[in-house]
Image 1: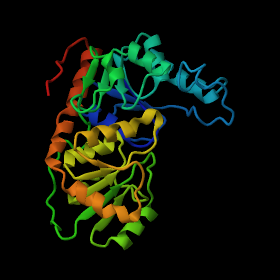
Image 2: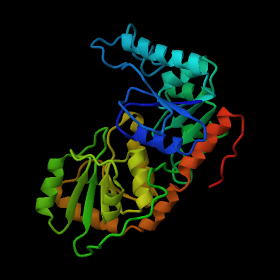
Image 3: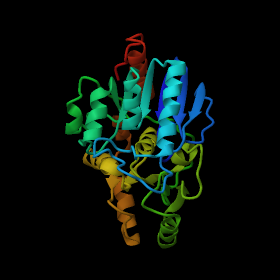
Image 4: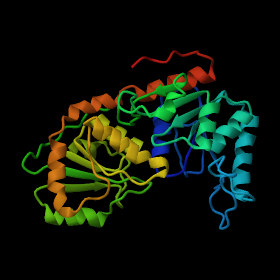
Length: 335
């Protein structure tokens, strides 16, 4: 049995876990406070919330951790639930995406830990701790395009997977081209984005030369693939899941990174802009700026998205997890 902790912010952590676990040969228990019903996992352990208390006291333990508020009943019950599961199931390893505290708890129980590394500047004490104790780090991007200095200290145990996309193995669906009137898909995230449906409506009124479509702005779509394939240009946040899905579809893209801790999305967007894979904007542009941005994106060579290495990324992650859990029983494939 392998445990997989799934952070509850947004939908990306769950989608990534499901994509990776579909490649694993061992049964997996999901540990999360997300309300998920997913047959990918052999079992789901629902964790109590640890962020519901009105009063928060010393949540970082003097800046040594990220979230351990004193006297919080939810935190106590959450950690107890995980400990009880470890004692009962004796997992071969636990994947943590993401929580310094859950990774530390697992390691204190003597369980091997695989953690997801995230973009941004991760040099604080808590991140140093979790990177030190992890048996392996999974970075869901290609090292050739983004090699943060702080992660180089862990080169001996960091595995650069490429972008993990649920669509990596799917073929583009047939579409009718609209060269005279390109389709623009505005893709928002479940964890929040820096644009709204009203922003898109304003653009549609001012710039009818484009067909404006949305996903995630009050119109969540479980299977985004057909809509991605139908787009000529994608406008999106810079979350890892969204970027990987866009890469799998190989679409000209304008990225607007959302504000996230440690500059996560800004780091990803900068790396992609520097590599010439996407056009970026720090905030939702003024409505008159959109034609130039869209045309700039259309002039990019979208075939270069292959450099984000989505093909085989989930299988590479699964191989690392099984190697840690079962002492090298499965070799890690070379990309």
